[in-house]
Image (cartoon, rainbow, N blue to C red; front, side, top):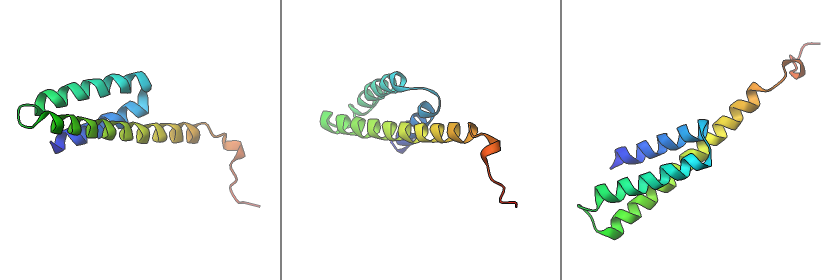
Amino acid sequence: MLWLSIAAAGAGILLGLWLRVPAVLAAAAALVVITVLTTIERRSVLEAVTYAFMLVIILQFGYLVGLLLSSAWTRVASRDPSHVSTCRR
């Protein structure tokens, strides 16, 4: 299930770059349903719910990383070049 962890992190980063909180909530709900349905047949209910919880945490951490990258990119892009010093005298 490493691929699901990597997919959750990547989806979180992409959601943080372009979309906001409602999309993350919908993605977290879909992730819980998919994880529980795919792991319930091989593991106990408690293990499936624990794994789903872990994936939601990974998704939200990825969202925060994407949000930080997005705000940093906006801040860099919005700088006025006339205020930048070239250190020439």
